[in-house]
Amino acid sequence: MGLLTRFRARKPYAALLVAMAAMFGLAACGGTTAASASVPGVTSNTITIGAVLDTTGPIKVICAPILAGDQLYFNKINAAGGINGRQVKLVPVSDGGDATKTKDAVRQLFEQDNAFALFQVCGSGNANVAESYTNPKGIPLVDPIGGGAKYTDAQGKALPWVWMTQPNYGDEGHVIGNYVTQNLHAKTVGLLYENDVLGLQQKTTLGEELQKYGGQLVASVGYSATQTDFTAAVQTLKATHPDMIVLNGLPGPTAGFVTTATGQGYHPTMGYLANYPMADNSWAKVLGAAGEGIYVSGYTSVTSPLVKQYLQDTTSDPVFSAYKFYGYINAKIFTDALNKAGKNLTRDSLRNALDHGFNNYDTGFGPSLTWTPEKHGGLSDFMFSQIKNGQLVQVSDFIKASAVWP
Image (cartoon, rainbow, N blue to C red; front, side, top):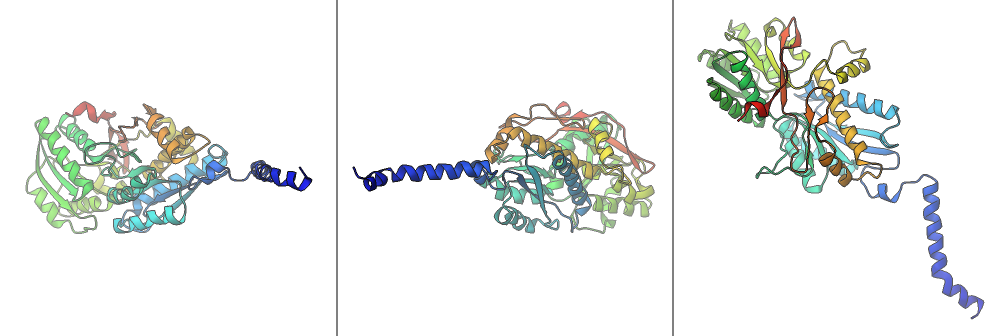
């Protein structure tokens, strides 16, 4: 066999050796690995995370400080070296609090910004719009912000790519009904509720719980999220003479109702109890003197070790923000999930970590969290605070929803 013939015979092997050398050379130079190259939003040194948080519209009072808390914690993690050597790049997009614009915001994150996962969508209805895009595509959605967000299908089976952290409003309705009858000893209750996914579920469960303990929901008035005139709502609830009025919804409308009632000289005999979106001192500040004595549902202890860590990281903040703390604690939960997913990060490895790495997980702020492949719901423990001298002060221990219903 001549030299030219032998070269031609060996040419495929020579090409293979050249390709192998190039591949090993790329790895040695720290280039993107084959594994990370195939995973959207993941490179050898970054993880791109998307978020849809209203910073311009009606719920920016909640969403903007949540985003600040997210960024605070992720910046802290990045400064310490990131997650398995990768820096977290958070890409927030605002939908203006308008659920009709949420899908376009989500599309931007995954079709233009090439995000790995969706961390937080602010608003129950907005989160449900986002889920209709991400879940069929196998994109993780962690921490949809809103107690009415979907995490199960019509048959009650866990949506495979959605994980809640916060409680749902149905569980909260049961605990509120228990607390107002058993602890505050109210017999008749009125309800102001946001007339959508945020309020309708809680209206049902509150009524169930009141009936269980001998109470009665004597009147309920729904309102739209953009409503500003509550004159008629006050008169309707006042006419039924409730011992207490439960306020469901968002800070702006509920504050509008209380200030309208106060202006009319009306105050329920035993006052008000608000659900957890109002669990922030900024709401108390808006209410001023009209807010004194109002009870507020919540699910984070302000005396936990994690709160102390948060306070150290926010010494320049003029006041404690429960919304900003929410972002901080949920960024911690998500960071822990990314760590549990391992260095060879994929959407499947994150799903596995979320489904199997959070059994009685210590959140650091009070209640524990458990996710399994069959259970993607959030926390179900609640505690109550009361506005005293313009500040929320904890006045109860945690109450588990499973302990009061059925």
